[in-house]
View 1 (cartoon, rainbow, N blue to C red):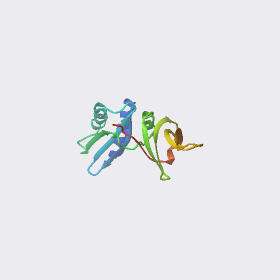
View 2 (view 1 turned 60 degrees about the vertical axis):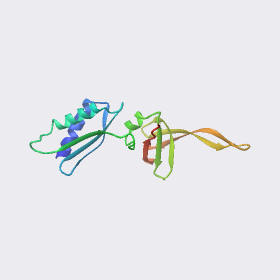
View 3 (view 1 turned 90 degrees about the vertical axis):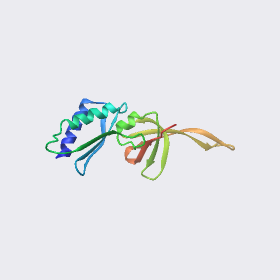
Length: 154
């Protein structure tokens, strides 16, 4: 019952704060509510506070005791939905495919079916000795992706 009510309140919050979206939420143990959100332009502390208040102020502490945590998706967390991919266009991703292979490149585009990744690679010259740098790109279907993470640059 509590989980359904929390989901309704989260849906209302995301209708009000349209640049934010849900990544995950759970209700564990002694009504410990954990919510992870992301946003098209990132997530501020105020965004977390707004979502938290929307849920907390509409639950009755008299009938159910609960704890609530609202957090943003971490920079090192895998991307899980299309909106996260879209907000990371132009950034470098490390993509692990379900076949066990791994690709690292720049996220160039996001479609309904998947993503377009591009990278530079050194390959042997067709004629003569040595190597040359070539541009490569690949379309990757979402269902072929096991995990995709943004590569953080320092």
